Amino acid sequence: MLERAMDERMLQARGVLLDLDGTLMAGGQALPGAAAALRRLGARCAIVSNDAEHTPAELAAKLRAAGLAMEESRILLAGALAVDSLSRERPGCRVLMLTSPSLIGHARAQGLRPASGEADAVILGRDRTFTYEKLQAAARAVRGGALLVVCNPDLTHPGPGGAVVPETGALLAALLACTGAVPYRVVGKPEPALFLAGMARLGSTAASTVMFGDNPATDGVGARRLGITFIEALPHKLAEAA
Image (cartoon, rainbow, N blue to C red; front, side, top):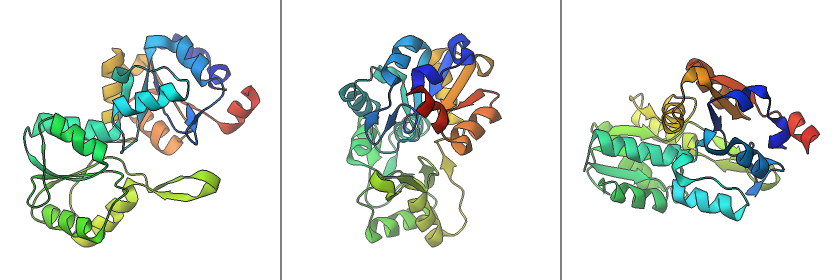
């Protein structure tokens, strides 16, 4: 589907940024045409995803299992980018990680010190083991001056059969209900960090880059803010191309 949904702008662009869910995959399965499209685009494309749970290495393995070939170096994920940016800005800092075990391990590998008590920063991602105690610890840390880094603002995403799956933004709403209005940084789309990281990885500029994704509120808004051409992966386009 993706291969036939591509238009001339994608074929001419120096860099093509691709969303993941709803664009390359759905329900853990590759969408028809996705593998052929990735082969056709080759090294000119990178994935930019609001994924706040996996590392690029994990996602590369998932893609391979689904028949999609993508180098780990061209997979940019909000959760991993949140860790990487914090490790550059505050090397070795104590960080309360409300994330997946994989991202906690990634934080350690980047030299950060995951903490359960006092912390210099809080990274909030998709934490499947989110508890009252974690909420309390995060609220105390943030109210005490810890930097709050939010992997993405997404409230939910659709699960199998249309089931509601809570996302990072829902956990953020709970935290802000406890802390009140506090400053925080969002890494994922529509904020610029993922787009900029993707262009840097591909060596492209905003004028020579295309963003292809299914969510105008994140992929589209974020791309247009930076002057990147946005092409929406419309369901009817994909259905017609299947």
